[in-house]
Length: 276
Ligand SMILES: [Zn+2]
Image 1 (spheres, rainbow, N blue to C red):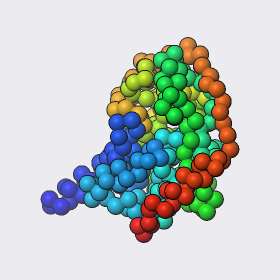
Image 2 (image 1 turned 60 degrees about the vertical axis):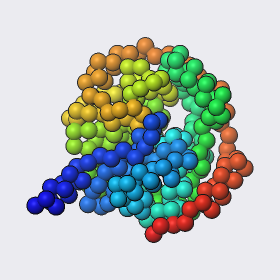
Image 3 (image 1 turned 180 degrees about the horizontal axis):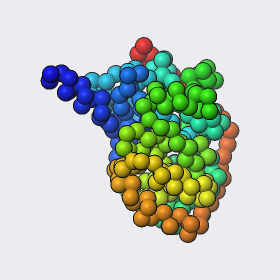
């Protein structure tokens, strides 16, 4: 009896193995563990350690649901594909070109003046280029892009409903599971965000529509990638702020695959041995 209760607890649990900056959620399904996003490039060892504390091996993760291809979400994805050789990644087809490039898009701009100041400050700490190790071609068949044909079976596997929620980026997707929604960067809760708005927006109109999509879902709690979970009603409260946003562009420093990134790949490859 005790064992059944324990198992049920684990089944319904959402675990956060991220850090103060980035949430990395993990939950269990009959198909194995699902991870929502990864984290910054160097955070794999810390994530692995947190999983271990929960008696979960990194190779127990069967799928990553990637909410979008940004450096803080796909940072150690290539490394993880090395380490966990059975892992598959569920993404929007719009994410692939960014994942191959290994650098965020600079389309759009900062949503507030505070966000702009924050982005410029990140530049001072060498984070202005928003690069991450690009996904190697050898991993192409480990990516499942969502389409009309496979959406239903992916939802069965994820035990949730996939929502297309662009605006922050063109490839942004969310996942509704029971009464919660993992929204990636469709909303944010904490500095330097105000009114649950994300600090970077590519397309304000799409972003506004994506909030409506979240609002139309029968869910209570939003699990953002940044900050603590919050009540979905907050989106209703703050949604009018979106139409007032004027995007403040940053200098476009987009480059193609760089030598620097290639070196990083080699470094990461040598650091880990596959666990399965
Ligand atoms: Zn993002």
